Image (cartoon, rainbow, N blue to C red; front, side, top):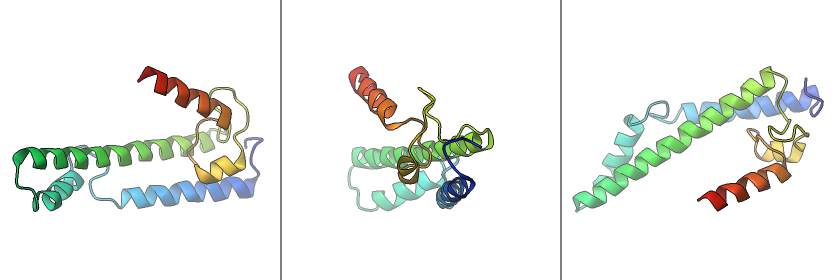
Length: 127
């Protein structure tokens, strides 16, 4: 087990990750792009749409929402894999411990606060 977390903390965080995963799994169409969820969003939104361009914007919104959910599922699965590999709670950049408060707020966190700030700043500079 990682030095960061005791067994009770790790159990609590694993349970939270699994709860989030179940919530996302219950969303229609999450696993596949262009799936039923996007069709449902498009259908609901297009009922009020008058123009084809408006409907296309709404279809893009549905695809974006599905993509966000798929990305969150991937982050959760990666966090669960880190738990299994005894790497959970360690920053992927500097290997320091990720504070418990951060993990409680974001159980799939990859980085400590300082490294996450640097990562986000670099991402903003790139575009």
